[in-house]
Image 1 (cartoon, rainbow, N blue to C red):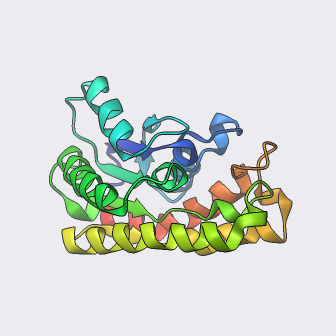
Image 2: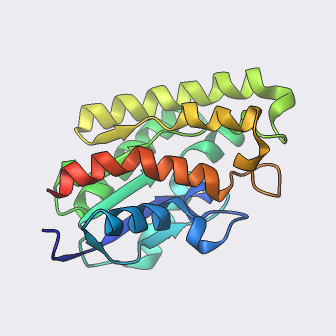
Length: 202
C-alpha cells in the first residue's frame, strides 16, 4: 500500500481551506506531508471547502464539483457556520448524516478511511474571547451531534476541539485576522489525525 499513490479528499469550510494562511499551512496539506514522510505516497489533497460554508452549502459545493472518481482517504470538518448562523441542531444532524454517506461513498464504502474532525472552538480566538462561555456551550452541542452520528455510522472521529484552547494563551496559534487559526494550529490537527490515518492505510 505504501508504494501506491493514494488520493485524498478534504471536505469542509474555512478550517479546511485554511482561511488567512498559506496553502502549505492548511491541515490537509500538512497531513499529506506527514504521511509522505512516514512512508506513504499521497497525492495533493482535493479540497472542497469555502470560508463560511454550512452543511447544506458544503453539499451543494460537492454536487457542483461533479466528482466521479473515488478516494483512498476522506476527511470531514463542518458545522462551525451552522453554529455561527444559529442554525438548528436538528437540521445539522440531518445534513451531517447525509454528508457521512457522501464521504463514505467517495471512500469506496470503506468507513475506516473516513475521518471526522470535531468543530474547534472559535471562542478561544481574540475575536470570540469576550463570548467564550456562550460560544463554547453552543459548539459543544454541535460536537455532541457529529460525534454521535460518526460513531453510529462507524467512521473515525478525532476530537481536535481541546487543541483550539491553546489559542487562549498563545497567539501564535491564531491567524492574523484574529478569528481563524494559524498554520501552527493546523499542524496540531494533522498530528492528531496522523496515527488514525496511518492505521487505516496499513
